[in-house]
Length: 376
Image (cartoon, rainbow, N blue to C red; front, side, top):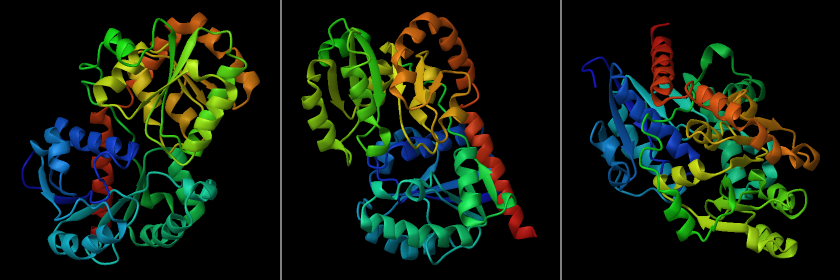
């Protein structure tokens, strides 16, 4: 990193390794990008205990200060932000809060990242406790932030509309993939053996089983419109709020022979599964960005996606973007077979717009915009 310009403190106490989903990848890839472009800031990352071990590449390049806790308790994390973090970041030129909220105390020059505002669109998918927390903390944080950043224009516009914040106080920091994505991917033969995939064509959905990820839509396609296709649907990801329903539905539809549950996988297995898939299928109802579709495009795998939320913005012409109806998706696998070379080419070109370096450049612009608020 270049020395001695502004000191940036990055609050990642919310980022419990392996527990916060796509927002962890989004933020970690930004940090890698800052190193990649030699960004002109002194960056210190404040993170939960164990972060340096989980992200050794980041720890080798940036200064990481670990909290005296793994921050698995939201209440204790909030306490640490208002005490431990506040005392250590008072002299920073800017504090970047990456978890969607800002402590009630501390440095007033702040960039706030809001990953999505799904709780406003689908409140039924949140527990009463979490919904109450978000409704209380997010509006307050947005009011107090110097600048608010989002991963897509879709989220940015939602923030502006819902909270009345002017465009001058918002920014978009795109998701970006590291240059080495896929380099260490697990071999297809190993994955086929380990997950008992046989010679079937693979359709992949990498998503926790939360209701908005819409696994049910795919399961019904496999049981009906795609029933004569020699495919296996590989479901990668942990158990979410819809897990029991998904398990029951697989049994009810009698498609257990066509569905493979891998659970959470490491990056090498994820990249290998994406690369070997006939298509990444992503019928999500809500995404603040949708990193899996970007990963698929970068790895040369066609994407079949819903036309919901930020997904059309991210995919562009790099994949099939379809309305969430069985009629629209019925012939999608055939379309992929007929258009595969074009979809792969367009996807690779689209992915070039979302690199870790370009994400970091967006972040630098947002930092400069935030610092400029002090001078006004």
